[in-house]
Amino acid sequence: MTFKVTVVKRTSKKPTGRQSTSSVFPLTLELPTDSPTVADLKAAINDKVGYLSPSRQRLTNSDNKPLLDDDKQLNSGGVVPGDTIQLKDLGPQIAWKTVFLTEYFGPLFIHPLIYLYGPAIYGKNFQHSKMQQYVLVMVLAHYAKRELETLFVHRFSNATMPMFNIFKNSFHYWVLSGLLLAGGVYGPWSSASAVKGTIQAQDGFLNACVGVWAIAELCNLRCHMMLSNLRPKGTKQRKIPRGFAFELVSCPNYLFESIAWAAVTVMTLNPAALIFSAVSVGQMLIWALKKHRNYRKEFKDYPRGRKSMFPFIL
Image 1: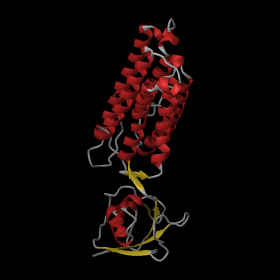
Image 2: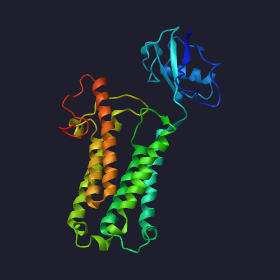
Image 3: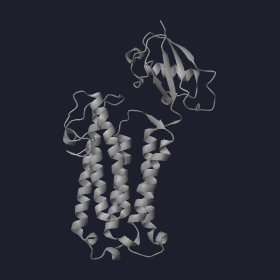
Image 4: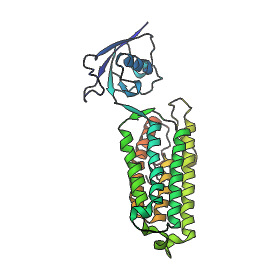
Protein backbone atom coordinates (compact mmCIF):
# COMPACT_ATOMS: atom_id res chain seq x y z
CA MET A 1 0.00 0.00 0.00
CA THR A 2 1.04 3.60 -0.54
CA PHE A 3 0.30 6.92 1.14
CA LYS A 4 -0.52 9.67 -1.33
CA VAL A 5 -0.26 13.37 -0.44
CA THR A 6 -0.01 16.65 -2.28
CA VAL A 7 2.59 19.20 -1.20
CA VAL A 8 2.10 22.89 -1.95
CA LYS A 9 4.69 25.56 -1.33
CA ARG A 10 3.82 28.67 0.61
CA THR A 11 4.41 31.68 -1.61
CA SER A 12 4.33 34.54 0.92
CA LYS A 13 8.03 35.01 0.20
CA LYS A 14 10.12 34.68 -2.91
CA PRO A 15 11.48 31.15 -3.49
CA THR A 16 14.82 30.57 -1.80
CA GLY A 17 17.40 28.63 -3.78
CA ARG A 18 19.11 28.53 -7.12
CA GLN A 19 16.17 27.24 -9.09
CA SER A 20 12.56 28.27 -9.46
CA THR A 21 10.01 25.88 -7.98
CA SER A 22 6.99 27.22 -9.86
CA SER A 23 6.95 24.23 -12.20
CA VAL A 24 7.51 21.70 -9.40
CA PHE A 25 4.71 22.53 -6.99
CA PRO A 26 2.10 21.37 -6.28
CA LEU A 27 3.99 18.13 -5.83
CA THR A 28 2.10 14.83 -5.73
CA LEU A 29 3.92 12.10 -3.82
CA GLU A 30 3.18 8.45 -3.26
CA LEU A 31 5.09 7.21 -0.22
CA PRO A 32 5.78 3.44 -0.40
CA THR A 33 4.17 2.60 2.96
CA ASP A 34 0.80 3.05 4.58
CA SER A 35 2.29 4.59 7.74
CA PRO A 36 5.04 7.03 6.66
CA THR A 37 6.76 9.37 9.07
CA VAL A 38 7.35 13.09 8.70
CA ALA A 39 10.98 12.22 7.93
CA ASP A 40 9.83 9.94 5.09
CA LEU A 41 7.83 12.77 3.56
CA LYS A 42 10.71 15.24 3.87
CA ALA A 43 13.07 12.75 2.22
CA ALA A 44 10.61 12.26 -0.64
CA ILE A 45 10.37 16.04 -1.15
CA ASN A 46 14.15 16.30 -1.12
CA ASP A 47 14.37 13.57 -3.78
CA LYS A 48 12.15 15.65 -6.09
CA VAL A 49 13.59 19.08 -5.20
CA GLY A 50 17.29 18.60 -4.55
CA TYR A 51 18.12 21.79 -2.67
CA LEU A 52 15.20 21.39 -0.23
CA SER A 53 17.05 19.36 2.38
CA PRO A 54 14.93 18.10 5.29
CA SER A 55 16.35 20.80 7.57
CA ARG A 56 15.03 23.52 5.23
CA GLN A 57 11.48 22.18 5.30
CA ARG A 58 8.71 23.27 7.65
CA LEU A 59 5.55 21.25 7.03
CA THR A 60 2.00 21.94 8.21
CA ASN A 61 -1.11 19.83 7.81
CA SER A 62 -4.42 20.88 6.26
CA ASP A 63 -5.43 22.46 9.60
CA ASN A 64 -2.27 24.57 9.54
CA LYS A 65 -0.75 22.68 12.47
CA PRO A 66 3.01 22.12 12.18
CA LEU A 67 4.48 18.63 11.81
CA LEU A 68 7.48 19.10 14.07
CA ASP A 69 8.62 15.62 15.08
CA ASP A 70 10.33 13.85 12.20
CA ASP A 71 10.03 10.48 13.93
CA LYS A 72 6.24 10.60 14.22
CA GLN A 73 3.90 9.09 11.67
CA LEU A 74 1.96 11.47 9.47
CA ASN A 75 -1.38 10.13 10.67
CA SER A 76 -0.48 11.05 14.26
CA GLY A 77 -0.29 14.65 13.04
CA GLY A 78 -3.76 14.50 11.55
CA VAL A 79 -2.64 13.71 7.99
CA VAL A 80 -4.62 11.15 5.99
CA PRO A 81 -4.06 9.87 2.43
CA GLY A 82 -5.08 12.46 -0.13
CA ASP A 83 -4.40 15.43 2.15
CA THR A 84 -2.60 18.58 1.09
CA ILE A 85 0.54 19.51 3.01
CA GLN A 86 1.97 23.04 3.08
CA LEU A 87 5.72 23.47 2.86
CA LYS A 88 7.68 26.53 3.90
CA ASP A 89 11.28 26.84 2.77
CA LEU A 90 13.28 27.95 5.81
CA GLY A 91 16.25 28.89 3.64
CA PRO A 92 19.88 27.80 3.92
CA GLN A 93 20.59 26.18 7.26
CA ILE A 94 23.60 25.89 9.55
CA ALA A 95 24.23 23.56 12.46
CA TRP A 96 23.43 24.91 15.93
CA LYS A 97 26.80 23.70 17.20
CA THR A 98 28.60 25.61 14.47
CA VAL A 99 26.74 28.80 15.37
CA PHE A 100 27.45 28.44 19.09
CA LEU A 101 31.12 27.60 18.62
CA THR A 102 31.53 30.60 16.30
CA GLU A 103 29.71 32.96 18.67
CA TYR A 104 31.76 32.05 21.71
CA PHE A 105 35.08 32.17 19.86
CA GLY A 106 34.69 35.94 19.49
CA PRO A 107 35.26 36.91 23.14
CA LEU A 108 37.91 34.18 23.51
CA PHE A 109 39.87 35.86 20.73
CA ILE A 110 39.10 39.54 21.34
CA HIS A 111 39.63 39.79 25.11
CA PRO A 112 43.24 38.52 25.18
CA LEU A 113 44.03 40.64 22.11
CA ILE A 114 42.83 43.91 23.67
CA TYR A 115 44.31 43.01 27.07
CA LEU A 116 47.78 42.20 25.68
CA TYR A 117 47.94 45.11 23.25
CA GLY A 118 46.20 47.63 25.50
CA PRO A 119 49.07 50.14 25.68
CA ALA A 120 49.39 50.17 21.88
CA ILE A 121 45.63 50.39 21.37
CA TYR A 122 45.13 53.25 23.85
CA GLY A 123 48.44 54.96 23.09
CA LYS A 124 49.52 54.97 26.72
CA ASN A 125 51.78 52.75 28.78
CA PHE A 126 50.14 51.35 31.89
CA GLN A 127 50.17 48.29 34.13
CA HIS A 128 47.03 46.20 34.32
CA SER A 129 45.33 46.08 37.70
CA LYS A 130 44.52 42.87 39.52
CA MET A 131 40.87 43.57 38.78
CA GLN A 132 41.57 43.59 35.04
CA GLN A 133 43.55 40.37 35.35
CA TYR A 134 40.68 38.70 37.18
CA VAL A 135 38.11 39.84 34.61
CA LEU A 136 40.21 38.44 31.77
CA VAL A 137 40.37 35.03 33.46
CA MET A 138 36.66 35.11 34.32
CA VAL A 139 35.59 35.96 30.76
CA LEU A 140 37.88 33.35 29.20
CA ALA A 141 36.71 30.70 31.67
CA HIS A 142 33.06 31.56 30.98
CA TYR A 143 33.32 31.20 27.23
CA ALA A 144 35.60 28.17 27.39
CA LYS A 145 32.88 26.57 29.53
CA ARG A 146 30.31 27.56 26.91
CA GLU A 147 32.36 25.93 24.14
CA LEU A 148 32.75 22.71 26.12
CA GLU A 149 29.05 22.64 26.96
CA THR A 150 28.22 23.03 23.28
CA LEU A 151 30.43 20.05 22.40
CA PHE A 152 29.62 17.70 25.27
CA VAL A 153 26.51 18.80 27.20
CA HIS A 154 23.85 20.54 25.15
CA ARG A 155 21.27 18.54 23.20
CA PHE A 156 19.39 20.49 20.58
CA SER A 157 15.75 20.09 19.62
CA ASN A 158 16.66 21.07 16.06
CA ALA A 159 19.93 20.23 14.38
CA THR A 160 20.07 23.46 12.37
CA MET A 161 18.98 27.09 12.32
CA PRO A 162 18.72 29.65 9.48
CA MET A 163 22.20 30.60 8.26
CA PHE A 164 21.54 34.32 8.79
CA ASN A 165 21.40 33.71 12.54
CA ILE A 166 25.15 33.17 12.72
CA PHE A 167 25.65 36.84 11.83
CA LYS A 168 22.85 38.14 14.06
CA ASN A 169 23.89 36.06 17.06
CA SER A 170 27.60 36.71 16.60
CA PHE A 171 27.02 40.47 16.85
CA HIS A 172 26.07 40.08 20.50
CA TYR A 173 29.18 38.08 21.37
CA TRP A 174 31.81 39.57 19.07
CA VAL A 175 30.73 43.20 19.39
CA LEU A 176 29.02 43.59 22.78
CA SER A 177 30.77 40.90 24.81
CA GLY A 178 33.95 41.23 22.76
CA LEU A 179 34.82 44.73 21.59
CA LEU A 180 32.56 46.72 23.92
CA LEU A 181 33.27 44.83 27.13
CA ALA A 182 36.98 44.28 26.53
CA GLY A 183 37.52 47.81 25.24
CA GLY A 184 35.79 49.27 28.27
CA VAL A 185 37.38 47.11 30.96
CA TYR A 186 41.04 46.82 29.94
CA GLY A 187 41.73 50.51 29.38
CA PRO A 188 44.12 52.75 31.37
CA TRP A 189 41.22 54.16 33.41
CA SER A 190 41.11 50.81 35.26
CA SER A 191 44.86 50.27 35.44
CA ALA A 192 46.78 49.51 38.63
CA SER A 193 47.62 53.19 39.21
CA ALA A 194 44.08 54.34 38.43
CA VAL A 195 42.37 52.06 40.96
CA LYS A 196 45.06 52.34 43.65
CA GLY A 197 43.47 53.16 47.00
CA THR A 198 39.95 52.33 45.81
CA ILE A 199 37.73 49.37 46.60
CA GLN A 200 38.73 47.81 43.25
CA ALA A 201 42.25 47.34 44.60
CA GLN A 202 41.11 45.55 47.76
CA ASP A 203 41.54 41.77 47.79
CA GLY A 204 38.41 41.26 49.89
CA PHE A 205 36.21 43.02 47.35
CA LEU A 206 37.78 41.25 44.38
CA ASN A 207 37.64 37.83 46.00
CA ALA A 208 33.99 38.32 46.96
CA CYS A 209 33.08 39.16 43.35
CA VAL A 210 35.04 36.18 42.04
CA GLY A 211 33.38 33.93 44.59
CA VAL A 212 29.87 35.00 43.58
CA TRP A 213 30.81 34.60 39.93
CA ALA A 214 32.29 31.12 40.44
CA ILE A 215 29.26 29.84 42.40
CA ALA A 216 26.90 31.21 39.73
CA GLU A 217 28.91 29.57 36.94
CA LEU A 218 28.92 26.20 38.71
CA CYS A 219 25.17 26.44 39.33
CA ASN A 220 24.64 27.36 35.68
CA LEU A 221 26.64 24.28 34.65
CA ARG A 222 24.57 22.07 36.95
CA CYS A 223 21.37 23.38 35.36
CA HIS A 224 22.69 22.61 31.88
CA MET A 225 23.66 19.09 32.97
CA MET A 226 20.19 18.51 34.43
CA LEU A 227 18.50 19.72 31.25
CA SER A 228 20.73 17.50 29.13
CA ASN A 229 19.95 14.46 31.25
CA LEU A 230 16.21 15.05 30.80
CA ARG A 231 16.43 14.21 27.10
CA PRO A 232 17.69 10.76 26.05
CA LYS A 233 20.42 11.07 23.44
CA GLY A 234 19.11 11.08 19.89
CA THR A 235 15.53 11.98 20.87
CA LYS A 236 13.41 15.13 21.09
CA GLN A 237 11.63 13.99 24.23
CA ARG A 238 10.70 16.77 26.65
CA LYS A 239 10.04 16.45 30.38
CA ILE A 240 9.33 18.81 33.24
CA PRO A 241 12.65 19.84 34.86
CA ARG A 242 12.61 19.11 38.57
CA GLY A 243 14.96 19.61 41.49
CA PHE A 244 17.54 22.22 42.47
CA ALA A 245 16.63 25.76 41.35
CA PHE A 246 14.10 24.42 38.84
CA GLU A 247 11.66 24.25 41.76
CA LEU A 248 11.70 28.06 41.82
CA VAL A 249 12.02 29.10 38.18
CA SER A 250 11.69 27.54 34.75
CA CYS A 251 15.07 28.82 33.54
CA PRO A 252 17.55 28.88 36.43
CA ASN A 253 20.42 28.61 33.95
CA TYR A 254 19.56 32.15 32.83
CA LEU A 255 19.19 33.28 36.44
CA PHE A 256 22.68 32.09 37.37
CA GLU A 257 24.25 33.52 34.23
CA SER A 258 22.68 36.86 35.10
CA ILE A 259 24.22 36.67 38.56
CA ALA A 260 27.62 35.84 37.07
CA TRP A 261 27.56 38.89 34.80
CA ALA A 262 26.27 41.05 37.65
CA ALA A 263 29.36 40.04 39.61
CA VAL A 264 31.57 41.11 36.69
CA THR A 265 29.70 44.41 36.45
CA VAL A 266 30.09 45.15 40.17
CA MET A 267 33.77 44.23 40.07
CA THR A 268 34.56 46.48 37.10
CA LEU A 269 32.16 49.37 37.93
CA ASN A 270 32.33 50.01 34.20
CA PRO A 271 29.54 51.35 31.92
CA ALA A 272 30.49 48.90 29.16
CA ALA A 273 30.00 45.95 31.51
CA LEU A 274 26.68 47.41 32.66
CA ILE A 275 25.44 47.81 29.07
CA PHE A 276 26.47 44.30 28.11
CA SER A 277 24.92 42.79 31.25
CA ALA A 278 21.66 44.71 30.78
CA VAL A 279 21.32 43.59 27.16
CA SER A 280 22.17 39.99 28.08
CA VAL A 281 19.74 39.81 30.99
CA GLY A 282 17.01 41.42 28.91
CA GLN A 283 17.45 38.87 26.12
CA MET A 284 17.55 35.95 28.57
CA LEU A 285 14.36 37.21 30.22
CA ILE A 286 12.61 37.23 26.82
CA TRP A 287 13.73 33.63 26.23
CA ALA A 288 12.73 32.60 29.76
CA LEU A 289 9.22 34.05 29.43
CA LYS A 290 8.75 32.20 26.14
CA LYS A 291 10.02 28.90 27.52
CA HIS A 292 7.88 29.30 30.63
CA ARG A 293 4.76 29.79 28.51
CA ASN A 294 5.65 26.76 26.40
CA TYR A 295 6.18 24.60 29.49
CA ARG A 296 2.77 25.57 30.88
CA LYS A 297 1.11 25.00 27.54
CA GLU A 298 2.74 21.61 26.94
CA PHE A 299 2.48 20.15 30.46
CA LYS A 300 -0.91 20.45 32.14
CA ASP A 301 0.64 19.46 35.49
CA TYR A 302 3.43 22.05 35.26
CA PRO A 303 4.06 23.56 38.74
CA ARG A 304 2.04 26.76 38.96
CA GLY A 305 4.23 28.33 41.61
CA ARG A 306 7.29 28.57 39.39
CA LYS A 307 8.31 31.87 37.89
CA SER A 308 10.12 32.31 34.59
CA MET A 309 13.58 33.49 35.65
CA PHE A 310 13.56 35.46 38.89
CA PRO A 311 12.23 33.59 41.97
CA PHE A 312 8.96 34.97 43.41
CA ILE A 313 9.08 37.94 40.99
CA LEU A 314 8.93 37.13 37.27
